[in-house]
Length: 92
Length: 11
Image 1 (cartoon, rainbow over the protein chains, first blue to last red):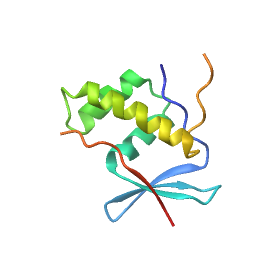
Image 2 (cartoon, rainbow over the protein chains, first blue to last red):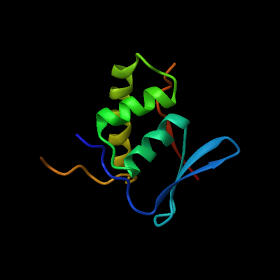
Image 3 (cartoon, chains in turn purple, yellow):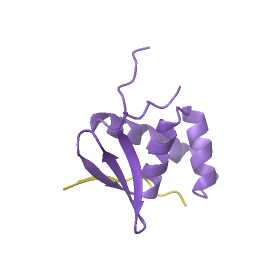
Image 4 (tube, rainbow over the protein chains, first blue to last red):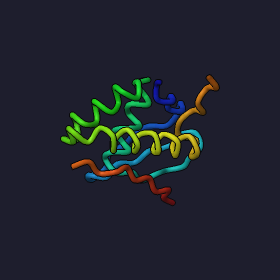
C-alpha cells in the first residue's frame, strides 16, 4: 500500500523552527509539527506505507515504535486528504 | 520517542 500523493501546489515551508504546509493555489496555510511535515514529504515522494514507517522510525529516532508510527501515519494521511492536502485514495 | 503528528489550520 502506498501513501496518497500530495496535492500539486502544496509545499512544506520551515520558518523559525516551525513547519507550515502552504496550499499555493487555494491560499490555505496549516501549521504542523515535524512529524506531520515529514509524513507530508513522504506523500510527495510516493512512498509505501512500510517505507514511510521505517523512514520515520529512523529519522525521528523512534526505533521499536513502528506500530504506533503506522497508526499515526494512517490517521495523518486521512487528515491530509480531508483537508485537500493529499489526493483521495483510488478505489481498489 | 515518537511524537504524534499535529496539524492546525492558521489564518
